[in-house]
Length: 276
Image (cartoon, helix red, strand yellow):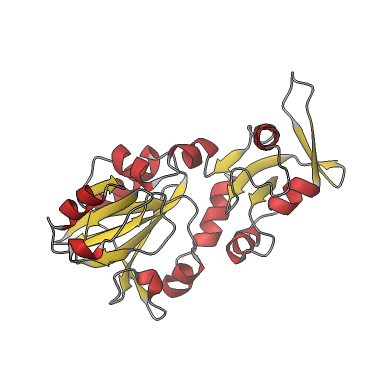
């Protein structure tokens, strides 16, 4: 039973999961481009070789790898074709998370469209007039990239937004308790974030406090994970007026600090999910 981990060789989260796996191979962008080879006869599944030995993967952990990781190939069409064949070689493995989920929910706006749940009022635009009009409707608004992956910026005055070149996601800023829920298969682990920052990731001293969700909230977390096609995720919420407002779900969240603070067995349970 070999798990293929798509990520950096020294990624501490990948290595934390690997500690609980009987056999694993970590493939990063450099190894995919330079160290592996692929063979297919067109009538059977491609085979990926590492050190001239076939990789017989039973599961795949997509930690952090670009969908097209090549740096030196100027022929982008050939790089895309190569990566398609490469990923096809592991089509029979158990993927955590699956490739279609990565592609279909690459942008956060796709998540918001897919989920009919409580969430902040949202506008995606690069029209400055529409953006300023939206900001004026609320006490304050959070701005973040459509694809996520960056810290939020908070606006109170529409005039403070000076220009927009690329679309941005604007959301009504809800003041409440930041909450994070990890879903791993059927396991659900939740903690409140203790912070005074608008974006707790900017707080170098924030802490997690374990909490229990109600049965209805726990089921909601499971439903979100299933709807997005994920096997595991970390869901970010804001609890306001005793209700959870959905912010986003992460395709491959970092978890070691959460695990350390809460003592929830995230790495162990993720490895278990890969093996079963």
